[in-house]
Image 1 (tube, rainbow, N blue to C red):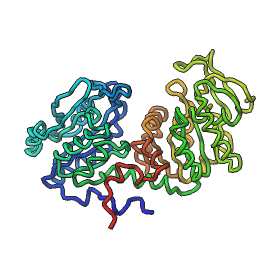
Image 2 (cartoon, one colour):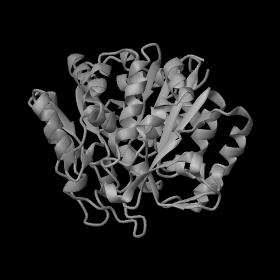
Image 3 (cartoon, rainbow, N blue to C red):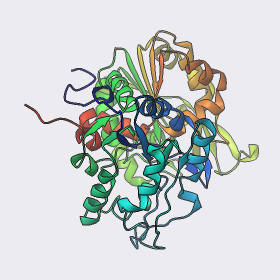
Image 4 (spheres, rainbow, N blue to C red):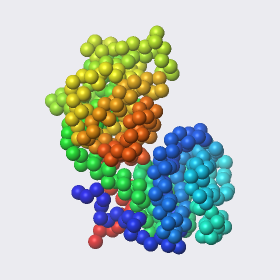
Length: 431
């Protein structure tokens, strides 16, 4: 199957001259009002410059953080989830600058309406090239973004009324919301350059060149069970980390580990059973146990070999995999000989327990013959922080690819690339 579905419209197919182009991007990189990593913003420069170069007028929108209170349904707005830091960053990089329209914000209901007349003065300035672009407020501040009701339809219509063309360039924003999904039914729509690039590289994960090695970690097993089962059927080897690995070890060896939900242990039993005959799961055999989570106190940290496990034994938190685990021949050879490596993993609880992750990333870098695909914001942040040399060299190395959305990749592994609803919404009808 081709990486790009022939029914998927691409940006090159459209004449942008004189057109207002509304682009959904994934600039969800703000934490407590500060940009934590600009990679996702930088990845959309190509789209922004292309729209302007082809005579179009760009309007951008993204979500930032979680804004809806699950108990009350109210929408929390404020500087912590505002797009101002993103716009400030863009305006330091791009001539002309983006402007955020001033819209009425209800303290509990967020932005209830986006009438065209509210944005019209800025549209005039944009078309006169007095400003470089318009950047809408956080999409999750809008009452209809996540509500899945008449408010959603209303917001989708209001967004569509702003522009001549909708571009989805937000691969990482895979949830079906008004700005990623519903809008596509109301206006000519296409995939952006980053979306196209992500789908091409996603195909390398879904249809990998063997031997295929996947490295997956996380804090909750239940959120990864679907993708893990799919990956297990594809891979030659699977390397687990974080609480997911703790749950697997608990299920396999009958031990109890602090911080591991018993429900996750029950779910992991299926993977343990599955692996009894195939033996695909690589088991790092030296763990770092700690009594505390928020610091590395040598008096409360010790090394625990898995060979010492005894059924019924209780342990404190396993917060990292010891670097020497990667010297074990089976693990070392699997990493060295793989032709495709997919990584969605921070092996330990950073920042205090980074050694296993740093060693993993360094070992992967030694395999110059593999296609190395990294997914997830945390994974990229730690790759950059722990092995900056590897990260910087990887930026210009075609054997590496950094996805902008790890959750989107895992969802696509389970459902298929065109099982992602925002992607499916862009497809032209079958003949």
